[in-house]
Amino acid sequence: MGPQKMKKELFGTNGVRGVAGKEMTPKLVLSIGMALGSMRKGTIAVGMDTRTSGPALASAMKAGLMAAGCNVVDCGILPTPALQYIVRGRFAAGAMITASHNPPEYNGVKVIEADGTEMGDEETIALEQRIFTSDFSFAGWSDAGREDPGGSLVSGYVDAVVGAFPKGIGKGMTVVVDPGCGAAVNTTPRILSRLGCRVFTLNAQADGTFPGRLPEPSIEGLGPLAEMVRSTGAAFGIAHDGDADRAVFVDENGQYIEENVELALIADSICSRERGVVVTPVSSSRLVEEIARRHGSDTVYTPVGSIYVARTMIGLVENGTPVALGGEGNGGVIYPKFQFCRDGGMTAAMMVSLLSGQPRTLSGLVENLPAFHMIKDKIRIGDPSRIITTLVERYASESCDLTDGIRINRPDSWALVRPSGTEPLVRVMVESRDPDTARDLYQEIMAYISG
Ligand code: MG
Image (cartoon, rainbow, N blue to C red; front, side, top):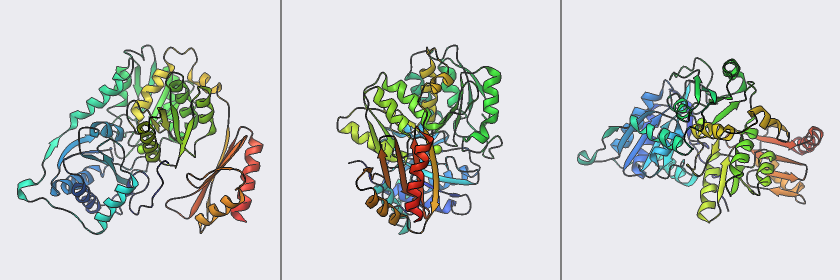
């Protein structure tokens, strides 16, 4: 019933990416702009993260759009979810110049639809076709597009996130924000201050050389955040990826919170007061499903990729099934009451709400959850689809989910084997509450893969 993955050439799961000046050139972005402007008529909002290559690529995008007859509104530096919020119901589309969590030398484009979601597979393939065949419709002199400034629109996003919570919900709470010199430098600290929190920041200047840490908010780069959380007595620390659609946390002791645990904690809080299913990819920990079930919420699984989660959520809502929460086990949380996309700023605010009036600390809440053991691996292999076929046959008598690769579900454990979209390899994930059970299942699967 949900969306199926379709093969794209240029675009990956979340847009086009490449090294700036090599694969990601102004020429390519210009052609994406001309193609998008030929497909979507009207006014298109353009934004970017803080990368050094951003201004040149954003200029190319705007040139392509205007040449095709679209007006553009330049929103400047802002998070991807802020651009998504701004586009929804107001513009014909959006184009975000970002490489998300990739290293500084990368850049890319995420295309946003009028409903605020990232462009789906079918439309993206149509866009690619236009690029490959240079199928552009150019405007004549009398209807060439114009550019208007849109730098102030981001305030509307900050206001809306803040407005989704009771006034002063963060009063008395100290928090530390590490936007990693990325797109959220002007949003998340403001959001948390306006919720009433006392906010400390680090890496909070826009800087595309990313001097403090890499755009991927991994444990290795979050030592200074943990340190500042401890020294300020903060309730938690939060860090974003480069375009701030994701948010990860450290607890009051500076301890990193695994992202599946983060999603489960937020699901626990939301599902305790809102009715509806939880939507998550087949790669997510069973912890999420278990926590949702405690509140009577079912879990709906999707292919791996935030856009599949978002589109499945939209489909469910359209068919009358309430959805409480969506998200991935990588810090990408989707709160459907606000918008159908991952939103790091909203996730930060949800953490404040979760802890507000809560007698337990964040580490206490984590300790209270059941522990799961996950094994992750990737195996280079010539023909990933053949392995999947083999496993489907071998496990035909068991409960299997073929949403993305194969997920074998057992009462005490599960395993996921899925082909990479871009490389000749399969990704393997195995999980159980019991480490030995996880290891046994992992070895069983590996025997089939290498055998
Ligand atoms: Mg991102």
